[in-house]
Length: 138
Image (tube, rainbow, N blue to C red; front, side, top):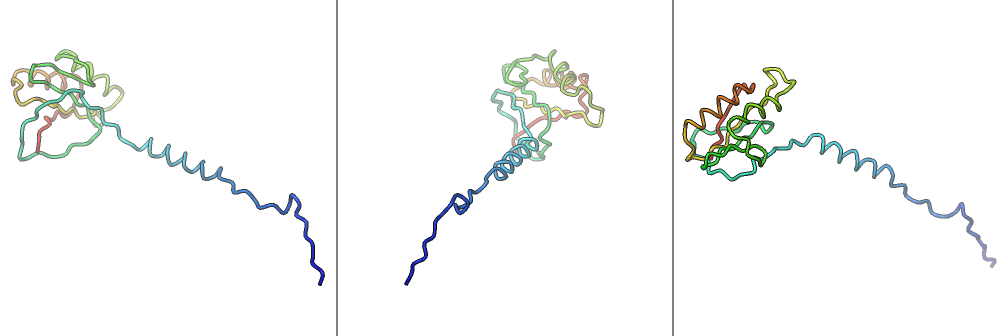
């Protein structure tokens, strides 16, 4: 019996698996999720919101402004004051029509004086906000 001898050449080596398309697909999915994610910017302060029985969910893409129990008006972690609300709302709604304007949500502490709350609502409206809502605990 003769045994057949076989020699392996470079062409007979096992083929490598090409993972380049897999890496491309992972990056495309990553870009898709980054682009479609809605980022909610928090106010940066803790506020004890009042209770409400008729609370409803609002859209996530909005302007969040906090009013603390000490009377501080905060946007994005920094104090803007009542006079700064108009500029913040105007800047964030710049280039948008009346129908596309971002709604303003006020996170007011339950101990906030009504006068301060009304002044902040007025400044938001003067800044171009079409709707101003007050955040509550449901």
